[in-house]
Length: 216
Ligand code: AMP
Image (tube, helix red, strand yellow):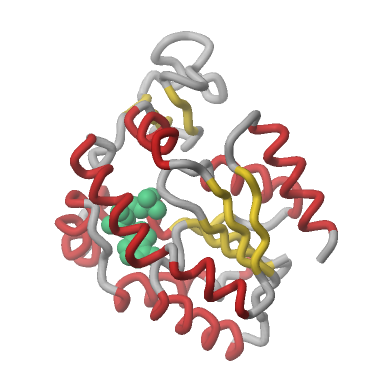
């Protein structure tokens, strides 16, 4: 199963992607995670990406495409993959189609998780991630059982991302509207779009997603 997950920042893409990886035994490939890893290990690529990321702007297509090209050729993508946070604009979507054609692995679907703007704001300003195992929490909607401690691995390193402050969030949502939202039409025109309502219980959203994917 080869999936592009679409949705604004805060739509729950990351969480749903983690579920899909277990269900289909395919990796979640997040360009945001790959970029944050490059920033924290201080690679040249990380240094180039950091400024754009801190401001909530997009990193250059060239950097992101290079990372994706390499990642999609790893052996764990044999059964497919879930792309989370890539493509982010029409030019990346076009490059992805070409790359997948080259690899003989066309996309099955663009899966959109649809959420209203107000809810997105609260979800983003409340977001916490575990530094050790990447589990995602929200201090308003889904806090860890014990304050400050990861339910999954017990780590106390729960952090609020540097780009999750209100100003940057506003910018990230604008960047999404302008650059990424046009991808909804792009996949719709290819008859590959699946639209899921992203507001409600996580379990219900997962179930709706699975039901749609089972029809492919
Ligand atoms: P995310 O974790 O997907 O919200 O990504 C965090 C930040 O990484 C974004 O705000 C961008 O600065 C950068 N980024 C992630 N994916 C991409 C992409 N496909 N193209 C350009 N920049 C990206």
